[in-house]
Length: 187
Ligand code: ADP
Ligand code: MG
Ligand code: MG
View 1 (cartoon, rainbow, N blue to C red):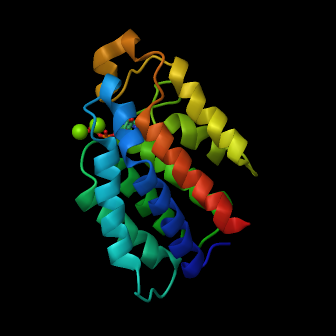
View 2: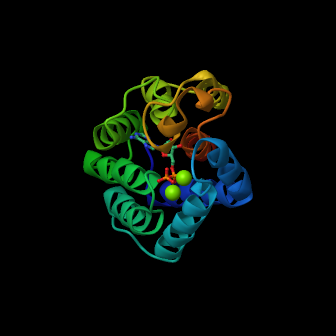
Protein backbone atom coordinates (compact mmCIF):
# COMPACT_ATOMS: atom_id res chain seq x y z
CA UNK A 1 0.00 0.00 0.00
CA UNK A 2 1.62 3.24 -1.13
CA UNK A 3 1.34 6.37 0.99
CA UNK A 4 2.03 9.96 -0.09
CA UNK A 5 5.74 9.69 0.81
CA UNK A 6 6.05 6.47 -1.22
CA UNK A 7 4.52 8.22 -4.24
CA UNK A 8 6.97 11.12 -3.84
CA UNK A 9 9.87 8.73 -3.73
CA UNK A 10 8.45 6.82 -6.75
CA UNK A 11 8.37 10.08 -8.74
CA UNK A 12 11.85 11.07 -7.54
CA UNK A 13 13.29 7.77 -8.76
CA UNK A 14 11.37 7.93 -12.04
CA UNK A 15 12.54 11.50 -12.61
CA UNK A 16 16.18 10.46 -12.05
CA UNK A 17 15.81 7.77 -14.72
CA UNK A 18 14.10 10.12 -17.17
CA UNK A 19 16.75 12.84 -16.78
CA UNK A 20 19.60 10.29 -16.97
CA UNK A 21 18.16 8.69 -20.14
CA UNK A 22 16.80 11.86 -21.72
CA UNK A 23 18.99 11.54 -24.84
CA UNK A 24 18.49 7.79 -25.13
CA UNK A 25 14.68 8.16 -25.11
CA UNK A 26 14.89 10.74 -27.89
CA UNK A 27 17.28 8.50 -29.84
CA UNK A 28 14.77 5.64 -29.62
CA UNK A 29 12.11 8.03 -30.94
CA UNK A 30 14.26 9.12 -33.91
CA UNK A 31 14.05 6.19 -36.37
CA UNK A 32 10.36 5.46 -35.65
CA UNK A 33 9.05 8.85 -34.50
CA UNK A 34 9.99 12.51 -34.28
CA UNK A 35 12.86 12.30 -31.80
CA UNK A 36 11.24 14.20 -28.95
CA UNK A 37 10.23 11.58 -26.38
CA UNK A 38 13.19 12.29 -24.08
CA UNK A 39 12.54 16.04 -24.21
CA UNK A 40 8.82 15.55 -23.64
CA UNK A 41 9.31 13.34 -20.60
CA UNK A 42 12.16 15.40 -19.13
CA UNK A 43 10.08 18.58 -19.37
CA UNK A 44 7.04 16.82 -17.90
CA UNK A 45 8.92 15.29 -15.00
CA UNK A 46 10.59 18.59 -14.15
CA UNK A 47 7.08 20.01 -13.84
CA UNK A 48 5.94 17.06 -11.71
CA UNK A 49 8.87 17.43 -9.32
CA UNK A 50 8.24 21.14 -9.01
CA UNK A 51 4.55 20.51 -8.28
CA UNK A 52 5.07 17.86 -5.60
CA UNK A 53 8.35 18.72 -3.86
CA UNK A 54 7.93 20.41 -0.48
CA UNK A 55 4.13 20.20 -0.74
CA UNK A 56 1.76 18.45 1.60
CA UNK A 57 -0.95 16.22 0.18
CA UNK A 58 -3.88 14.98 2.21
CA UNK A 59 -3.94 11.57 0.52
CA UNK A 60 -2.63 9.46 -2.36
CA UNK A 61 -5.41 10.43 -4.82
CA UNK A 62 -4.52 14.11 -4.28
CA UNK A 63 -0.87 13.64 -5.23
CA UNK A 64 -1.81 11.43 -8.21
CA UNK A 65 -4.12 14.18 -9.49
CA UNK A 66 -1.37 16.78 -9.24
CA UNK A 67 1.04 14.48 -11.10
CA UNK A 68 -1.58 13.83 -13.80
CA UNK A 69 -2.23 17.55 -14.33
CA UNK A 70 1.49 18.33 -14.61
CA UNK A 71 2.02 15.53 -17.14
CA UNK A 72 -1.00 16.50 -19.23
CA UNK A 73 0.00 20.16 -19.36
CA UNK A 74 3.76 19.74 -19.82
CA UNK A 75 4.68 16.48 -21.62
CA UNK A 76 2.70 17.16 -24.78
CA UNK A 77 2.78 14.78 -27.74
CA UNK A 78 0.90 11.51 -27.72
CA UNK A 79 2.50 10.35 -24.49
CA UNK A 80 1.42 13.32 -22.32
CA UNK A 81 -2.32 12.60 -22.31
CA UNK A 82 -1.60 8.87 -21.97
CA UNK A 83 0.61 9.23 -18.90
CA UNK A 84 -1.79 11.85 -17.57
CA UNK A 85 -4.71 9.46 -17.94
CA UNK A 86 -2.74 6.70 -16.21
CA UNK A 87 -2.28 8.88 -13.11
CA UNK A 88 -5.83 10.25 -13.23
CA UNK A 89 -7.19 6.69 -13.27
CA UNK A 90 -4.87 5.75 -10.40
CA UNK A 91 -6.28 8.71 -8.44
CA UNK A 92 -9.78 7.28 -8.91
CA UNK A 93 -8.78 4.01 -7.20
CA UNK A 94 -9.02 5.94 -3.93
CA UNK A 95 -5.94 4.55 -2.17
CA UNK A 96 -2.40 3.31 -2.87
CA UNK A 97 -3.08 -0.39 -3.41
CA UNK A 98 -0.66 -1.31 -6.21
CA UNK A 99 -2.61 -4.40 -7.29
CA UNK A 100 -5.52 -2.05 -8.13
CA UNK A 101 -3.48 0.95 -9.34
CA UNK A 102 -1.70 -0.70 -12.24
CA UNK A 103 -4.79 -2.32 -13.83
CA UNK A 104 -6.62 1.02 -13.50
CA UNK A 105 -3.75 2.85 -15.23
CA UNK A 106 -3.60 0.22 -17.98
CA UNK A 107 -7.33 0.43 -18.65
CA UNK A 108 -7.08 4.22 -18.90
CA UNK A 109 -4.14 4.13 -21.31
CA UNK A 110 -5.84 1.55 -23.55
CA UNK A 111 -9.08 3.50 -23.65
CA UNK A 112 -7.41 6.85 -24.30
CA UNK A 113 -5.00 5.56 -26.97
CA UNK A 114 -7.37 2.94 -28.40
CA UNK A 115 -4.46 0.53 -28.43
CA UNK A 116 -4.30 -3.16 -27.62
CA UNK A 117 -1.25 -5.28 -26.88
CA UNK A 118 1.00 -6.13 -29.82
CA UNK A 119 0.78 -2.67 -31.41
CA UNK A 120 4.26 -1.61 -30.25
CA UNK A 121 3.28 1.02 -27.70
CA UNK A 122 3.60 1.58 -23.96
CA UNK A 123 0.58 -0.75 -23.59
CA UNK A 124 2.97 -3.64 -24.31
CA UNK A 125 4.80 -2.90 -21.07
CA UNK A 126 1.87 -1.89 -18.88
CA UNK A 127 -0.29 -4.88 -19.85
CA UNK A 128 1.95 -7.82 -18.90
CA UNK A 129 3.04 -6.10 -15.69
CA UNK A 130 -0.41 -4.94 -14.57
CA UNK A 131 -1.77 -8.45 -15.12
CA UNK A 132 0.76 -10.03 -12.74
CA UNK A 133 0.30 -10.11 -8.95
CA UNK A 134 4.06 -9.74 -8.52
CA UNK A 135 6.55 -8.55 -11.06
CA UNK A 136 10.31 -8.21 -11.22
CA UNK A 137 12.68 -5.81 -12.97
CA UNK A 138 13.46 -8.66 -15.33
CA UNK A 139 9.77 -8.97 -16.31
CA UNK A 140 9.79 -5.27 -17.15
CA UNK A 141 13.01 -5.49 -19.19
CA UNK A 142 11.62 -8.44 -21.17
CA UNK A 143 8.38 -6.59 -21.95
CA UNK A 144 10.30 -3.51 -23.12
CA UNK A 145 12.68 -5.60 -25.24
CA UNK A 146 9.74 -7.49 -26.80
CA UNK A 147 8.53 -4.28 -28.46
CA UNK A 148 11.62 -4.40 -30.69
CA UNK A 149 10.23 -7.15 -32.93
CA UNK A 150 6.74 -5.68 -33.19
CA UNK A 151 5.32 -3.76 -36.15
CA UNK A 152 3.86 -0.45 -34.97
CA UNK A 153 0.20 0.02 -35.77
CA UNK A 154 -0.57 2.93 -33.39
CA UNK A 155 1.00 6.35 -32.90
CA UNK A 156 3.64 8.02 -35.04
CA UNK A 157 5.69 4.81 -35.37
CA UNK A 158 2.84 3.31 -37.40
CA UNK A 159 3.78 5.73 -40.23
CA UNK A 160 6.99 3.76 -40.82
CA UNK A 161 5.10 0.46 -40.62
CA UNK A 162 7.37 -2.55 -41.09
CA UNK A 163 10.44 -0.35 -40.82
CA UNK A 164 9.61 0.02 -37.12
CA UNK A 165 10.82 -3.56 -36.60
CA UNK A 166 14.21 -3.72 -34.87
CA UNK A 167 13.64 -0.66 -32.69
CA UNK A 168 12.45 -0.53 -29.08
CA UNK A 169 9.37 1.66 -28.63
CA UNK A 170 10.34 4.84 -26.72
CA UNK A 171 7.13 5.00 -24.67
CA UNK A 172 7.61 1.35 -23.71
CA UNK A 173 11.10 2.24 -22.49
CA UNK A 174 9.93 5.20 -20.39
CA UNK A 175 7.06 3.12 -18.98
CA UNK A 176 9.66 0.51 -18.06
CA UNK A 177 11.55 3.14 -16.06
CA UNK A 178 8.32 4.10 -14.28
CA UNK A 179 7.46 0.52 -13.34
CA UNK A 180 10.98 -0.34 -12.21
CA UNK A 181 11.07 2.83 -10.08
CA UNK A 182 7.92 1.56 -8.37
CA UNK A 183 9.67 -1.73 -7.53
CA UNK A 184 12.42 0.19 -5.78
CA UNK A 185 9.87 2.04 -3.63
CA UNK A 186 8.06 -1.08 -2.51
CA UNK A 187 11.23 -2.83 -1.40
P1 ADP B 1 4.71 11.95 -30.13
O1 ADP B 1 4.61 10.63 -30.83
O2 ADP B 1 3.48 12.74 -30.24
O3 ADP B 1 5.96 12.70 -30.50
P2 ADP B 1 6.04 10.96 -27.75
O4 ADP B 1 7.23 10.84 -28.61
O5 ADP B 1 6.25 11.71 -26.47
O6 ADP B 1 4.83 11.59 -28.54
O7 ADP B 1 5.51 9.53 -27.33
C1 ADP B 1 5.51 8.45 -28.22
C2 ADP B 1 5.08 7.20 -27.47
O8 ADP B 1 3.71 7.29 -27.13
C3 ADP B 1 5.21 5.94 -28.29
O9 ADP B 1 6.51 5.41 -28.19
C4 ADP B 1 4.17 5.02 -27.69
O10 ADP B 1 4.67 4.24 -26.63
C5 ADP B 1 3.16 5.98 -27.12
N1 ADP B 1 1.94 6.00 -27.93
C6 ADP B 1 1.69 6.72 -29.05
N2 ADP B 1 0.42 6.50 -29.49
C7 ADP B 1 -0.13 5.62 -28.62
C8 ADP B 1 -1.42 4.99 -28.50
N3 ADP B 1 -2.41 5.24 -29.37
N4 ADP B 1 -1.62 4.14 -27.46
C9 ADP B 1 -0.65 3.89 -26.56
N5 ADP B 1 0.58 4.45 -26.62
C10 ADP B 1 0.84 5.29 -27.62
MG1 MG C 1 7.84 11.70 -30.36
MG1 MG D 1 6.21 14.75 -30.90
